[in-house]
Image (tube, rainbow, N blue to C red; front, side, top):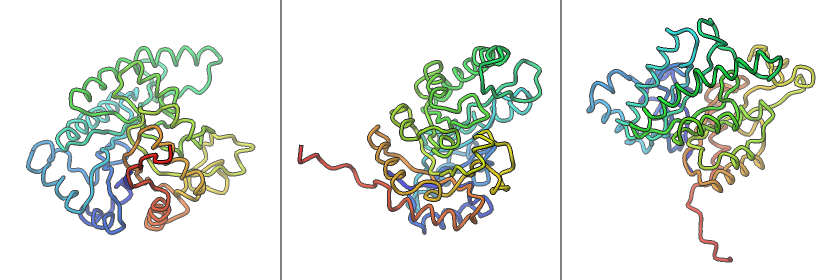
Amino acid sequence: MKLGVFTVLFSQRPFGEALDYIAQNGLDAVEIGTGNYPGGAHCPMKELLASKSAAEDYKAEIESRGLSISALSCHGNPLHPDRKFAAAHHGVQRDTIRLAERLGVKTVVVFSGCPGERDGARYPNWVTCPWPPDYSAILKWQWEEKVIPYWKAESKFARDHGVNLAFEMHPGFVVYSAATLMRLRRECGNNIGANLDPSHLFWQGMDPIAVIRYLGKAIYHVHAKDCRIYPPVAVKGVLDTSGYTGEIDRSWIFRTVGYGHGEDFWRDFVSTLRMVGYDGALSIEHEDSLMSTDEGFKKGVAFLKGVLLKEKRGAAYWA
């Protein structure tokens, strides 16, 4: 396995400076944001698509520091009911897939998006319960009229460019759980899989280890991010809409790895990933509002270096 980082963490730094810092801290891989919600501070998309030599130089800048690209990421909402918004996110996604092919990157990380409840709606409508029956009707319309047709086409486009789409399961979007991810995969193609972020699973009350076993070979990329559930959950539940910086009053907050769950969990996490055949990068995504960028990153690196499985598994000589 490789230790990586989502470079949007260092968006305020020039790309070369960020790569130097990442390499100096002993990492192996970078996940690069290309636009949409993560932004594209380190990815001059138009330049890289316009010039093959520029793309080669860009890749060489990364590899010269002993790093590889684990994924390109363009989390967005191409199903947004605002057509202009959706078209912009769709365009970035298509360009990201084209760039991945040019750079030899096999994985593009995305969100599934979320439509409204009908054509002409202004905002996305995330359905969280089946009753009253209005909600079931909305969900049926969303999947049959918007979600499946759109992602069938995108799956084919990605496949034609040699790319897998790794969906980050996130509340607010139609793919937020292992079950919804596998539904999309069944309906739209087996180059659709997961960008597994355990923090989003903890937040919703799921067991990340069970999810890994359930998804198996459908895991294409992994985020290393933790989450801690706090006492307000007893009265607010996990669907907490209070602001992220009011930590003391929240049901949960994102934490640096090791500050939500200890070594026992993370050792089991990487071991179970290996059991199902995943041997790619664990990409640190720092969103811990109690720590600075550098402290959260360095603590995450130090913690993961102690639990990551780096060498190839040995022969079972005792069996």
